[in-house]
Amino acid sequence: MIVYRTKTDLTGHLLTLQNEGKTIGLVPTMGALHQGHMSLVEKARTENNFVVVTIFVNPTQFNDQSDLDHYPRTLDQDLELLRQLEADLVFVPSVKEMYPEEDMQIFDLGGLDKVMEGKHRQGHFNGVAQIVSKLFLLVHPHRAYFGQKDFQQLVIIRRLVEMMELDLTIVPCPIVREKDGLAMSSRNTMLNKEERKLAPFIYETLVKARGKMETLNPSQVKEWVILQFKKQSDLYLEYFEIVEDKGLMSIDEWDKEMNKVACLAVLLGEVRLIDNLNFD
Figure 1 (cartoon, rainbow, N blue to C red):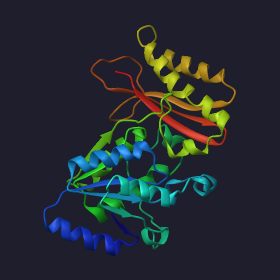
Figure 2 (tube, rainbow, N blue to C red; figure 1 turned 180 degrees about the horizontal axis):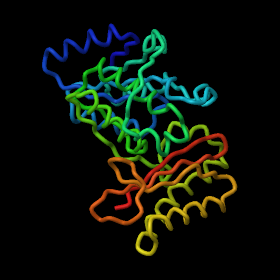
Figure 3 (cartoon, rainbow, N blue to C red; figure 1 turned 90 degrees about the horizontal axis):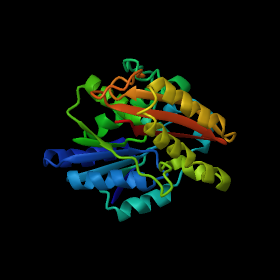
Figure 4 (cartoon, helix red, strand yellow; figure 1 turned 90 degrees about the vertical axis):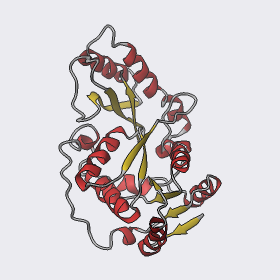
């Protein structure tokens, strides 16, 4: 496994592969890798000749400096996991390498960045678009792999690929969960023991909410979910929305022809967790 830290080394190596007609799969990450990330790498391995994993905690997508400072960083452990998975190349740039000067790009994401996560994390998705666009143009992958836990991000990245007119397939990968249902996340390591015991309530509530579809309309399901979290003093529900999966518009009726996804964000202590579930 090759580890590069500069764009020059990365692009020089990949140019040879591109000239040989090799297919390249890209798995962008912010490190603190877990089984969810591993599933992306494993899928990329089966579908491409060469797999590139990037590890970079991108500062422009954090609207809270404290959140950036406390984001888990476990590079040595991450590299060992990727060696075991036989990733071909890992790109671990510095902030200076990716942002030699301030990135002033503003992306028109068609309003997809204004709801849910975007409403609560101003500028977050523009930062995501900045770094992902840079990685796409550096790596020129044939396929890029993203987890469905960050569902809104996935929708926005598909929009970004259309905007950039890239010949690139975005491959969504299912959420990987702990045995108790909690969606795997790098942030889970920040939970203390008591918080970790409470965290499965998030997925349990999503599943129960889906079960209410036969008797309640979408607005009533939303009210029911809000009530469940109000009963939990240690869990603060930041938002819960049921949206269609293309434009992320909230729905007001159960349309069988429409793909529906329930999304939420919850604060548990100092840790912010997101999750989603298909409502089809």
